[in-house]
Length: 455
Image (cartoon, rainbow, N blue to C red; front, side, top):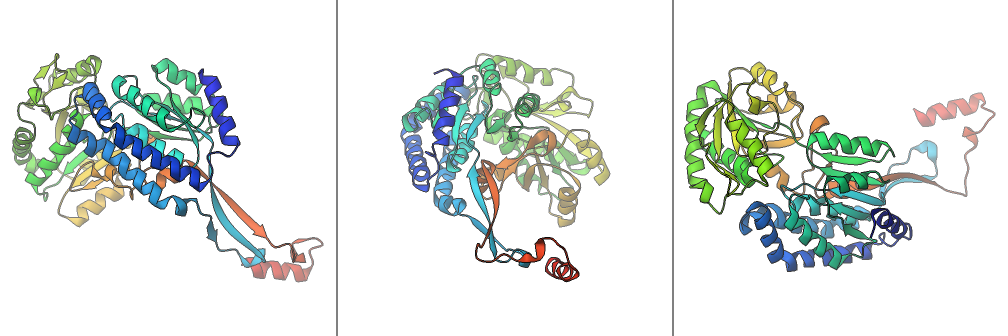
């Protein structure tokens, strides 16, 4: 089916009210959950071909999170769909006020390759729960997973309800030339700007989940061994190809050597023989492989790692001694390279972090509440963790999203339902009484009454 025809059919389907009822939404979400469970072996196989990701990591970081979100949406669907009653001011006697969630309509979701199941299906689930139709455009880089997703969705939804459209960047551009009621994009900041520009043509509301240079701060009070273990986990999971991966470390000068040794120790424990290790993910393609290698080969001192295998598309977990002028500090790395910088004062932290746009995530390792509170108060970032990395992404109760250049809007759990819903504010007035004070002529008596009611 041609793109324009598909969009037209989905608009018709939505306008006929076929996505709106609680029963329809609940049944289709249950079918989707069962189909994902049925497709698990195919999804594991596909994502292994695309990224070399193990079954355990694929379930823990992708499929399991989608199933968890489906369970959450099913459990809370009825409550999320209910009108929310609000207090009505005395001046509007007799009336009642409420907010009513309403789906936007025909939505477009553009997903990336790095978590090709999670970042495609989690917003998809939110859009369906909220009562929308959906066109999902997965990445052309994760070709195997995208093909399986297309088959999976087609077995649950008729095309006029939800469909997967495959293709390269040209197909994404063609989709964006059309009018949608909502656009949800996950990817890089530069492409995000193009999506925002396309959305502006029709004033289409949107969510942009982008990225940026997410810092890890390790202060002088931190428990260094635990910090190192959790930094290594968060950074080298998915070979660093994670939008909220620690991008660089800012460690207090007095703790640098201790932290470096602890990082090396945990890399060796968690990723031994990384170039041959089946638990260590590969780089998505040769272009990104060469881009990441350039960071290693530009003159910064390699503290640990640095080896690579083009045949396997793998790069060792690598630690660099960097400065603010290093090439590795100019852009989001999105790979298994971790620069280490030092600081001495809180002002140093601000000066370094504020040289980059607002990060999507920030992590602080500290045992001092004063330090933690100062950092979370004075630095703008999307979200993050205290004494851990990336796990804030995995809870349905915490909205996930960036700020300014790291993103617009958020989702997860209830916030996913809210993101794909417009909330109509409605005041319903009684038809058996009509207070005359709002109507002309405005007498002194009416003025006193109006001031009394509206004070």
